[in-house]
Image (cartoon, rainbow, N blue to C red; front, side):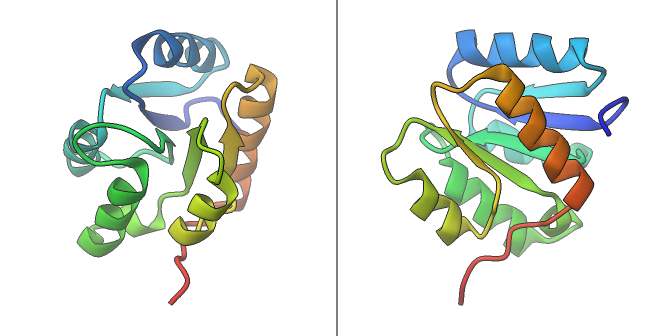
Length: 131
């Protein structure tokens, strides 16, 4: 599933996010872009995507902070799958704390990213942080 599915890309790396957005659009996704977590939260409040692809380390709300805000604000945001991408060494642990099974280490292959996004859309597993 991808045609028409809306992906919100939240990443402060303009070059990488630009390439990712172009590839996703070429694959049939509807793409919205935020340059940091605060901008991502504003876009989430205006219209919910089917999936959020977010970097972990960003100014003005990190990926984990944005994911937490999505959970506590609810408004449907808590049901949106989150895909974390990052170059941090402990990405699997960060993903565990966020409660998402979807994570990919930078640098990544774009085909791997597409596979993971499609999996997230098929499974629709929203973050479920451990208690």
